[in-house]
Image (cartoon, rainbow, N blue to C red):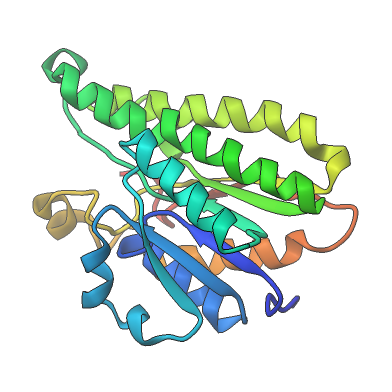
Length: 238
């Protein structure tokens, strides 16, 4: 397997869940990891803070100003991002008519609008270095019709549409774009009742991170682009 010892990875939402395990697995294969969290103090509770290959950064994806601050930090410190993993996301499971304007705006800003803005910033840096890998952690919910996830599914589907078109724009520029569509994964995106009832059927986030990092490694092989990764629980959707 290809080592990532000369690569720098930026992972959004790295303080817990899938993002935490992505950071751990990336470090294991030699990468330098910059992980973001809306609350930087979250990293003080994590064993990642003691790892010399990990740097925690504050990023609130609900705020375009926070994204601009991250851009200034990367540029001023001459940080070359080889791999961007858009992992951070928000889910509010209600019927569409029950969701408030504020809730709809929050899900749309984090899952779509500001993730697209961040991708635009990092892509332009990648184009300057003429290489890069962008990974979007989406959801299996965009391929099935689940109630109570209208806005969540819609924002993830919109990001996939952006990703598919962007992939065609950058094929000849040595940029790889990968979309990951996981089924139900055992993280705190679910409430305690759902986790208590179904966690034994859900995907283990550490296993999912292993799959993603392995495919990122394979992405550095010449003349191939891994485009879509679909991972489902063994027993199927909940």
